[in-house]
Length: 588
Image (cartoon, rainbow, N blue to C red; front, side):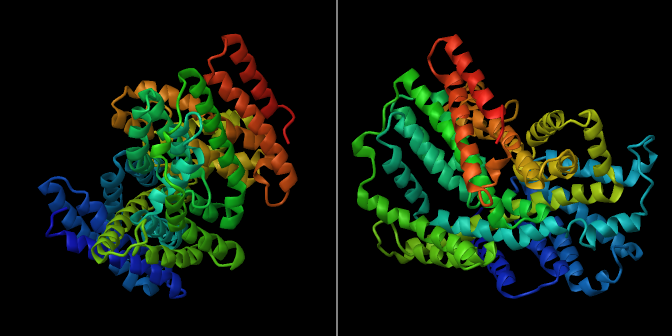
């Protein structure tokens, strides 16, 4: 980004922020207006801002102009298009439809790489030519005007409910996260973590766990979490003599857990609201015990590594003083308190509560950790918020728009139902084999596809099968969402591990092996949610939920020590087996 273009991007980020806030306070805006405009604002970020070569910049500008015109055309003609009931009329509309789909694929490719747009392109090809596939996996054929119309001028494809979540909820929380990250909240996370865990054995690693859990709950990205908190925690751990593979693994595992940590949980929780029809608060409450269990397993694993390597705590001189902890923690506690009060006490929608919290967060940008004001620093913070929010809203928009193509084709062609039937028959109508097949599918798809997109695609085809086999819909969705996270630490493609390993200059395979042992909860807790259904029923049956949580905690502790502790092999095996029996026998 050149100094000449910087004001443009700052202004565009500000426009994106005010547009999404305006949607919250303006009342009802037609979906065929708000959602195309959401895409229009994302286009320059996804196509031009990320350009690395002159050709990419020129082509990005051309595609941005075409896409912008197409989005505006849909928005201005939403009344007429609503009367067409998803059927295109004339060559111009067909051309606009092709342009929108092609540009969405290119947005996603430039934003996150080839895998997700490749899946979407294959889905489109199946929609066009699937009638020529013999057997049960072919379809009866779709008129091009009907298929393209449903995907581009109706609310069944690009402008469907997933994009609605991106527009009205995810974008608001992304902006909220950008505001918190623009000020002292990040330092507040580090100070609270340092004060709470710095003095303990393995304290530097535990500081990383706490700070990454707090930061990750608002960032929603394991990779972004590693890059941000890791810049502080990784040097601190290696300086104290922690093995590089352990330091990198701790950061990768803790950062991955941020996406399952309430209250925000990244974009996935908000998509889950739309797909399950459950209130956001209900999903958040259901997710809290499993998230705590995940971080408990990481904590226990660090204790076991501390016994093996004699890991010290953080020296007293490097720990934050009480005043710094109190002052900087207010920079995230005040907005979080307002957010939670708005959702639980005020009875507001999550996005409206986030707007209220955002006002407090923006006011705190005027002050630093010493409660001093600087006009220049405040200006820099607000410009960084505009740039960060514009970039992140655009990336999530590109992901969700592209995933919406896949979901639209699955619905139009009936392929989703056929894959569900295949899953049911392949599992022999038994739940646990179906869960295993679903987990493998999540791992494979999640290797190169962002967690939210992997979750959406997997749950669209596997969710109906799992519910038909007796799972509660929320159980099925949380199971798929957790397993969509596996690829952050599981080879061969493990993004969080790659970044952390690069930052400490360690072999990524060594880091991945340590991360899988530390993050064993990521593999076991989703299965424990199935074996112990009360675990996610904290709101309705708190006593039984806590009993189930205690039971799983004991089992996880035993398994973690069995994997990591320096005890004799037979003792470790016995510990792991006993832990598994505690979790999976006689579920609660």
